[in-house]
Picture 1 (cartoon, rainbow, N blue to C red):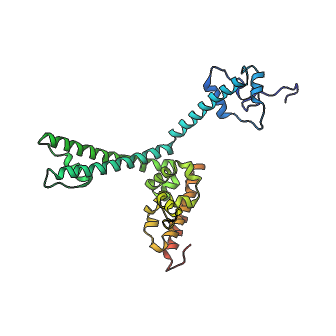
Picture 2 (picture 1 turned 180 degrees about the horizontal axis):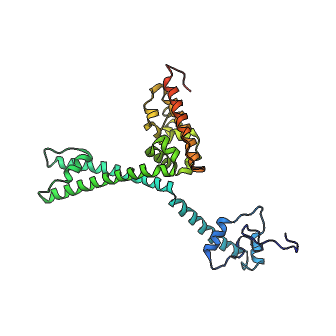
Picture 3 (picture 1 turned 30 degrees about the vertical axis):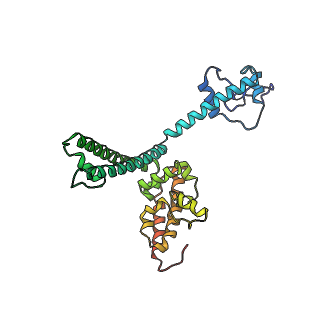
Length: 293
């Protein structure tokens, strides 16, 4: 309170009009901005203060304005989140997977169709690329060759998306990309739904990301607990003796969880994390019939 007993007016919802102090009723963008940036240290009679200041006609009018401003603020926040760099990686990884899956399915269709026409028909995307270069000799060949071209095009787009991911991931998550490799780092970010959700996950969850089906089967009592998910593709796990893979996966997941937190909360490159993980894996691999951890 000021010396004359009135409330101070500022952007922290403490003005005489509360949250919408100084906001034009006909400016929804300003109302949304106040919702996103404002704060209040304690509850108050915000509708009453808005009516008293002349901002709203009555309580219902205040809540209608608040609803519109809150919805707009939420939409703006969601839009900004979708445009964030880590979300672009999420979309790129999913698009790459879709393009790869579709290319492989179409390649099977091309091979089946070509097998009915050419004695030298092959299989796979590579054969589709080869067939796409053939000069069609009939209307049927024309359609088959065109389909092969579409297949090759989807595979090429998947390759371009992979190159984009390899290039962009170190900019978004430098520690995670260095430790896991850009492709696996981007996949973990995608599986988690973003860098922030990944940074908030415990190491045990990071360890089994991508193995959800196996985990649910385990929870239903139909399978053993999975030791690893997507991180199995990492050389530190895949290249470790089967008896020690669980330990290697735990060690890798622990450091990946730390790397994700550093990338999200500070963005500072910390090469010592790589060295610590490397030493840990070397000890695990060096154990001669050692005990699991």
